[in-house]
Amino acid sequence: MDTNLEKHIQNALVKFTSKEYYEDLVKAKEEYFTKAGQVFEEDDDYENRMSSFNLWYLLQRLPSNSNATLMSKYIEEEEVEEEVKESLLNVNHSLFEYTGQSFTKKHVLRDILHDKKIVLEKNYIMPSIVKNDIFMGRTIDFNSKSYLLEGITTVPVDVRSVLIKESKKVRKLQDDKRDLQFLMKVEAFKTKWRRYGHIDAKKIFQFK
Image 1: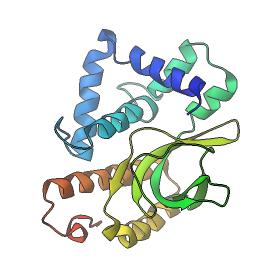
Image 2 (image 1 turned 45 degrees about the vertical axis):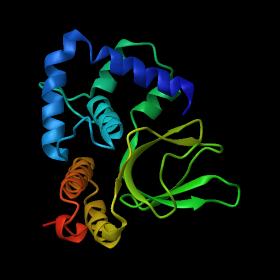
Image 3 (image 1 turned 30 degrees about the vertical axis):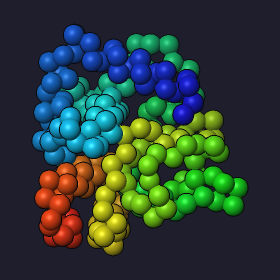
Image 4 (image 1 turned 60 degrees about the horizontal axis):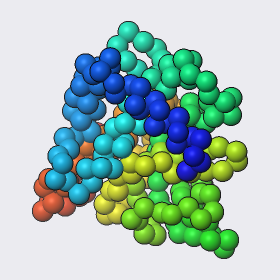
């Protein structure tokens, strides 16, 4: 990822995990993992889950008595370049399918939830996913280039058709809050499936 973007994300994380924000951070963790399913340090995906929480905490959660995210607050209080502001306030949280590399060797994602194609910046090193894997994550655009942020959560390929069908329903609503509710539910289903691996994933990933 562009070092300038990474710097501001890390600076914001340091700022809003300081002692001053400790109580709100504890509340945020309880809120997030109640919705998305509990995570434990011994879990294989612990680091990814925590990275996902950090990004939700900064970019999507609205703190008590506030209509602005912590990232918005950070941008108001710190010196941030205009083009960086635009990128940080428009991170794309979605359900993706990795479709492989293009003819020019760039990694290509299908944004299932928003029905669009995303081509990552050349020479980007993909995390441990392979072609046709489905995962939740966040992309960010900067200077006409797209990057995949840390904190991806893979989901069973067996439920691909179910997720595509539900994504179409959610997409028609054109509501960011509904998008987030859907993605949190998918993460909760994934957590439950990991805990009860002997159960068919299709019996767990059921939307009502």
